Length: 514
Ligand code: CO
Image 1 (cartoon, rainbow, N blue to C red):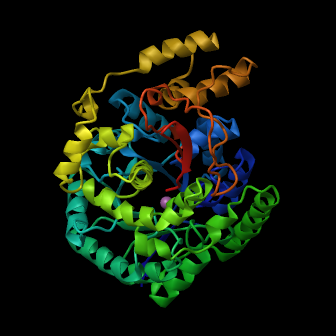
Image 2: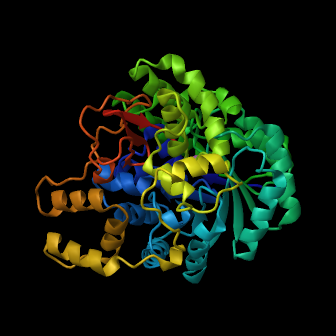
């Protein structure tokens, strides 16, 4: 029997998918401690949106949480999700910040770094891979899975070979939207296993409700590691339950060696913790409803429900079909980017604007303008050149893409700024956090250390979607990101979930999960 590794995602992706990363530091520690006894191959506990959320919503240092987790779970390998050159943010950061982040991450207890780029552009992950190896971490190179005429099994197998040549220790198929079908999972895992000997991990979400079959087929095809959550954190936009993975393993003659008593203890604790969030209203119950439509539209479930509620708020719910039909068109125009943060928000916004304005690309958000200039990286396929020309004509000051290695270093400047507002010399980890999320990190330290509410808190209101998947509101105030005020249509990020769009002076808040 071939051995099967199971990675538990409860503390990171489970928390992110159904609790919008609001799990408290105490609950995170308690869960990590019981899950540590189960014998998982590894536990994904950090990264993704949790870094930002720690400062922004939990009012905690994300580094301190990581040290807590390491202490609570000394026996299991810990993994994190890194967005390549975007680190845990939404833009490219310079190599100095990237290397410091990766080194600190490993020093503080992370063993495996799952590295991906939204466009699958190797340029955007090569530095992360090099630094992870340099500092002794395990590189798990992840391919962002999507479906398009160019994203064939051969395309992915070639990408895997490329990542292998760059030094990857293992590979992940990252199906962040949960759109892989059982048949495709079998064929893709087979294709990758044929072209590479590296351990292969499958990550998928249960949004479309076919994941048990997906995992069964992947196990049959020889996948080495599968991702799941302890069952109270499973289902909906989250993941398949670990308990179900064990049954699928039996069905496919794969050997697992989890401690079932420890798993049962972990279940009891997870169940009581989830009940706490149900009672406090933080559980995204809507996110637990299966949504097989994502297989038709190829958009993440969260994106679909949020587009719908956004249009409902505008009294334009009848346009949802138009928007859903427009999304694949925009993707095609843009050279088929995978719909993952931040591309999912960008493509969704452009589709809404195209429909609302009645003329395609009459209004183009800044991020799409940056995208067509190549600032996010290489397009997966040739974009529509007429559309590119139309968008380019709307950009007065064109920019040239800069290789990530050439971005100017900001560490010393930011250290000075922090020294000034803290009245003490900041630690390296504090400067790194500030360099990625200046607004929330400054607010966090000012509230904690200086005991004052920051009145220059950045525009990112906390009206962001804390409690439901339908938090879209008409936002009467002008969008506060200064870069948005000059453009007639503009966008601004708020964590990775909310997006402000101004159309004809009316601000819309799009909330799109990915
Ligand atoms: Co995920």
